[in-house]
Length: 297
Image 1: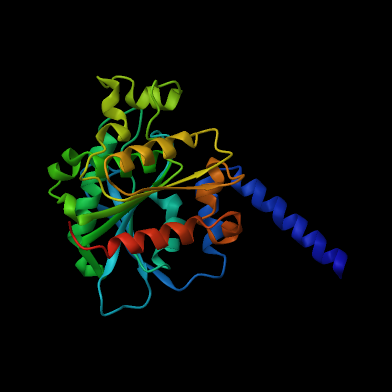
Image 2: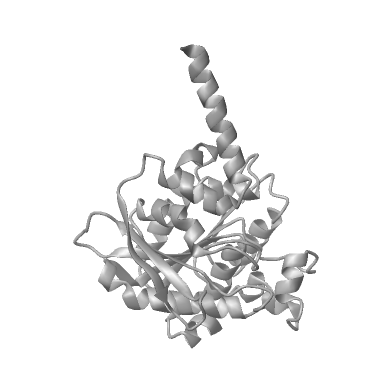
């Protein structure tokens, strides 16, 4: 029996590795959806349009049980180097944060090569505006919004939270944005030296306008910047550089670096099968709840 159990574990492990090597986010979502462990959540809305482009849509997740008090609204932006990814593959992130007590909107956004900077930032702000307009319907507070994202999605979350131009154009007051949790995000990455960033932002002039660190001010919201020590895709200095700039401006910038985790490990740690990799979900959810309850300034 022991040999059979060991063999089953080995086979299951090999199956997980194979699945995650083929369209990793989508396969991760499939595995996560079949895993037990989270409190009950619901997908309360699908394919909600926030623009006319087919990619300008979002899904919304919420805790299964209603509460008498409105919950914080979290908008989570997927990664993919600004050229790939979609909301359907990140249901695991929506479910994870919904189980932590948030109403969660997960949008897709327009991608390279058909769209370049700043189109995906405009989409990010428009998605926040749409989610905010629906917040009360799904039990969320439209004035207690927190943002999160992984990789390129963390860049989008940071940019629209730091540069007031985008949310203002979408009619969202900056006072509604209570904080940002950036997972493995690029915030200070000049010169552009990777194909993905060159294709997405190479035509922007001056190049500094593409960098979240460029927009830090005394009005910036609190940020938790999560990174992995083994991340060679978006190096940890991005988190430390932005945190240093926030602190210099008198704002809250906190870094959590997880030893041994790489770029993919950070996002995998949101999913139920891989949470033993690190406290990414618990730490980010605790931070976002804390800042969502801060009084307006």
